[in-house]
Image (cartoon, rainbow, N blue to C red; front, side, top):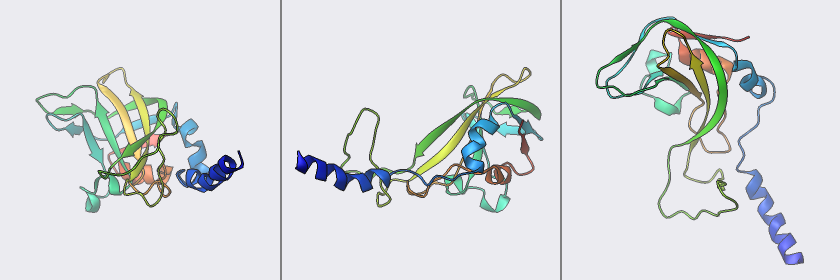
Length: 181
């Protein structure tokens, strides 16, 4: 019994290391603040053929940076053979979910299973994650526009964080803006 207790105590630092840094204040309330707000698309955006989303990076100097910078993506309902235009409009933000996106998995790594759907990660893993807000969007005129996804930069699990409101605004650039309730 004492050995099990000591073993559990020795694993405790490993379990706490897999959590992202918690930012009090703005980021803690952003889930609540985004819901019921508005996503205002200020200019028409074209979703390329055979794609369901278009990436918004705001600053042209980092275009193509992908998930290595905070960024947002606008997602439509269907993948079509022809380009789709999302017209300038105001979308109501419905449900806001937090999602973890994984970027890299190394073959041959040992993973311990603690419970269904639970994985142990640590800062020394080669797996990077991105924490992202998935905001459902609603417009009576453009029901095919489904989701606005805004994520922080990909990083090691300990350093990954949801984007701040300022980082989201920078990602949207001059193409769009958020209005919070």
